[in-house]
Amino acid sequence: MSSKDPVRQFIVERGVLVLDGGLATELEIRGHNLNDKLWSARLLIDDPDSIRRLHLDYLEAGADCIISASYQGTIRGFMQRGLSREEAENLLRSSVTLALEAREDFWGRAENQIGRLKPIVAASVGPYGAYLADGSEYTGDYDLNQAELLAFHQPRWQVLVETEADIIACETIPSFPEAIAL
Image (tube, rainbow, N blue to C red; front, top):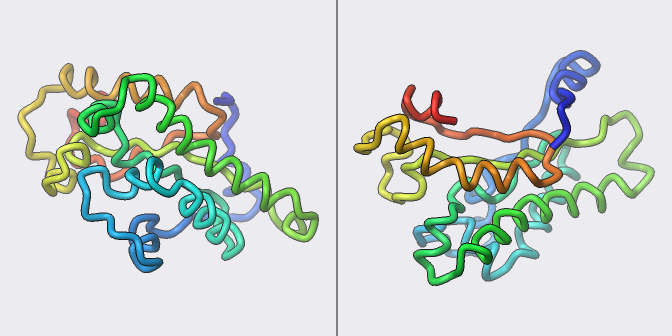
């Protein structure tokens, strides 16, 4: 991950940064059943090409930033599905790779570079409650202190930071201790 601030360039030069839409919502519209504890991260296992295609569609629709399908993807969650730690980490990396591939496909066409800045890829980090899949990602009502939240998030954070994502997107963080942990 680079140390420059790619968001600033959009704000300075364009005055706005357009994010992609709701990944899971659009995947459901396209016929995917995401009634699963892994939610859209399940498709990293079952149908990664659907995620890549959706990233590309968002770029073609004008998004300046596409966000990886790792919001609900956690090492613990993938391991509960029966995957090894290495497989879980590879799926997290894959979530970013799919977005990078879509961006390169999009940006590789000269007509897409006219009047645009190169889009940003954000690696998504969802809250602990997303792993629980019980709605607590909106309330922060889980019995973990800041140190326990840090211990939960650190392994996924480390994997995502080591990818070529431009930024990390901490999404739907419902509690101050969790924000501090991140």
